Amino acid sequence: MEIKQAIITISSALFIVGCGGGGGAGGTTETSATDGDSQNQAPTSAITTPNPYPAELLTDDEREAFLKVINDARSIEQDCGSKGVYAAAPALKWSDELYSAAVEHSTDMVESDIFQHDGSGTDSDWTGMDIGKASSVADRLENNGYTDWRKIGENITAGTERDTAQEAVDAWLESDAHCAILMSTGYTEVGMAHVEDTNAYYTHYWTQNFGSR
Image (cartoon, rainbow, N blue to C red; front, side, top):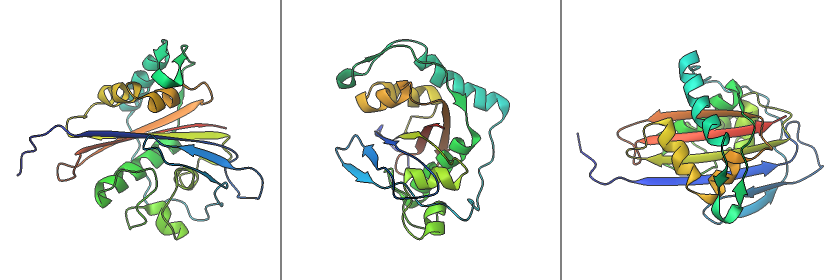
């Protein structure tokens, strides 16, 4: 087995404000990513087929450990650099639907060798295969049952030695855009997933989905 010598890390963030579920002509969504790309897009169309590969749910201990790391970060003031200083924020509740969408995307990034918020559009982009195009964050969340949302967001990070939830959250807190999403009072729920593959470029792939309904 090849031993990776370099420690490689990467992160990206995206948030969407709008109305989720059911499509329709009203409203637009705004997205913002740390690589400088930004765009406006209409709310996603309704998903007709549920995700055919439901994620195995975490144990109570695993779920509570993930949630504790997130809420511990939110329980104190955070300096998010160019995004400003954020006061302590209310604790988030865990959502299995947001978690399932996070598993789907981390799995897709591993299997398709991508690092981006859009799905790969390949067989590992399960939602994308359902709707006939590369999935968006909103597509994946709705396909995993998170519908009628008011606001959603996603943080992703990866690294050859980023193997704990604490390391992932610490990395997001060190980036202005990720920190702002993690500390936002506009979210009430969260789900976070980790997929590891020693043959993948970054080895450890984390996706963190936020939402409010």
